[in-house]
Image (cartoon, rainbow, N blue to C red):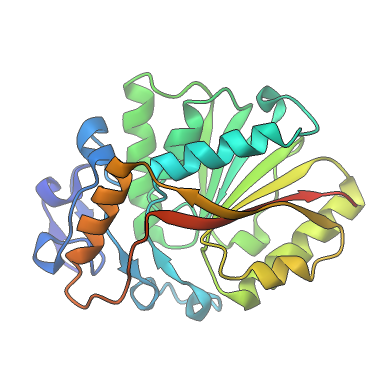
Length: 254
């Protein structure tokens, strides 16, 4: 795949996936324009092949709306977590280019971790994290792991995991089975924020997890306008944007 210059990547030279070139409708989100990072664009799941057995279950890459992320974290804080936010490690499952990690790093979490299967997205994410650190925006350590979320070991201590519809039912089921086994063996605190919760039924089947919230979380007008504009520029128009995300919050109760 040919390399293209930083005018399109926003973070220096990077191999661009289909959907991340201007000629393919790529449009920057104001978050990137304001912060000098590259988290915009939409990459369909069929373009995220890595050779891994879970490739066919990948949905797509798209960065979470900052306003949805902030509102969902606020709602989670009102749910009465079992520890202070400062004791939780934030874990972004299917971190993509790292937008949620950047947002979380501005909060006083104990640490921020991410796991991403696609090497190109992971490479861009690491550059974004470096920009965030250099700008002094990170209040907490950040680490991205390139690999399979099912095989990713949850950090020790309380964890808050974000899933922005990263994969379909098969992998969701395998992930939840792995986490349930880990929690039974080691105990601890684990809460989940699930955005665009298309595989909600898989969580409903999981013993030991209780749902704390199910409903719509609205974008701010600015985010709604930005996402509508970005998705309207898709050449194939296969994805749509609403003024909200269907979300849920879950907690391990054993």
